[in-house]
Length: 323
Image (cartoon, rainbow, N blue to C red):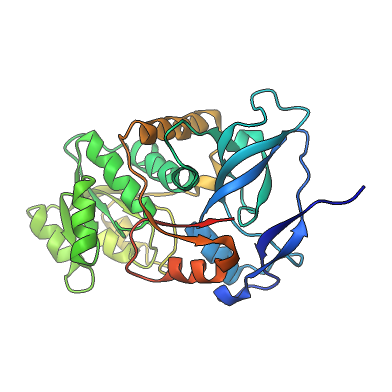
């Protein structure tokens, strides 16, 4: 039997975006509890960039990537809740940077009409993470004040919208007038330009010296600043390390009796209650209640350029690739 082939962006060793190669590889087979998806769009997640840069693959032609969306073309023998032809968003710890991916059916979510593949691909990781942070971890409530570090990233952009819908006051670090203006249309109340302003000082001014109730920090290198910005007994959730440094001194957090949560959403999304949340978010996107902002689209053949773009500063929302 001839093995079917597909195009993919692969790499053999960790490094800068140029380690990515666009080449032919074997198409994955569909296991009993899996579905095979023909990918329509790939969302480049922060974890994809960190894996490519720092994690040496165990075998050549490694396909990185958490999130993608597309159409089911094959269903495993043990799968009863999916069928060929359905459009799904998919989440797995690798394999998105390709024309096809095989994923567990429990790591897929039906895409409603009116949501394109690019928006659907960006929902599970970024919006799922933001929802889990705001609701399950921070238990944010109406009238609370939230600081979002890196408001123009997709987790930040999602958190701003979700917190705004709760009736919280939302402050975010963001650079550039155009990006700030765009985030205000999504629910941002106050912006702090981290390049030219003292973030903690501005937070103190905006909160009459009290500090914010909660912080979402996807940056990592800003954690000491986040500790300072919080009120006594405030709550913080850290969800990433895009700043490249996640070794904070925790003594200030202890001194202020802060509550710290870490969230790696990839370990949670197959839990039934969490999976239902992703489906609800997709429904909200379809209804126009939440907006997925796509910064730029690249062909999968230009994966190296797409990763380079996603790593640079000054973007708003998610970088996606199309096979």
